[in-house]
Image 1 (cartoon, rainbow, N blue to C red):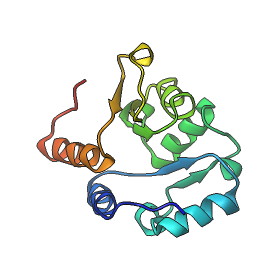
Image 2: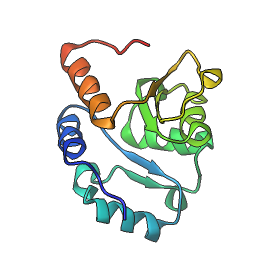
Image 3: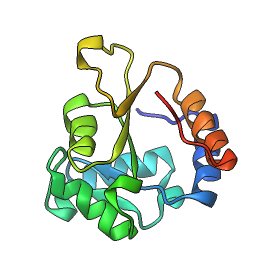
Image 4: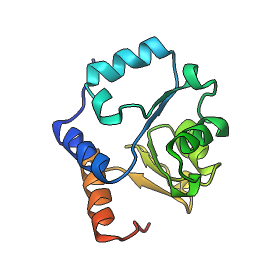
Length: 142
């Protein structure tokens, strides 16, 4: 059973007050909706839940990422994608000019690129930094 850290949940709620947040996930609609409901995060993301079976494209297909940006009414360059799959999430996001944060505990330096960040810390640390930087009007530097 998957769970979400209470602090991460609180930070997502704070982010939601200031920025559009969304989920883009691969899989079958029924299975992914069960996961979302088990995590009790549907109310955080509301109508910004994009499941590959519904939108017709799977990550890393650029059309999946572009579809989300279009639905959120933002340019891909304005998006920050956070994911744990280097191929599906990070490369997919970078291919449409989104910034990306790779959540991993096994990042290899040979995979490092100029336009994404590697997060080896707890995700709550990452989200706190994002929120702090947003409110300070700063950008996150590598």
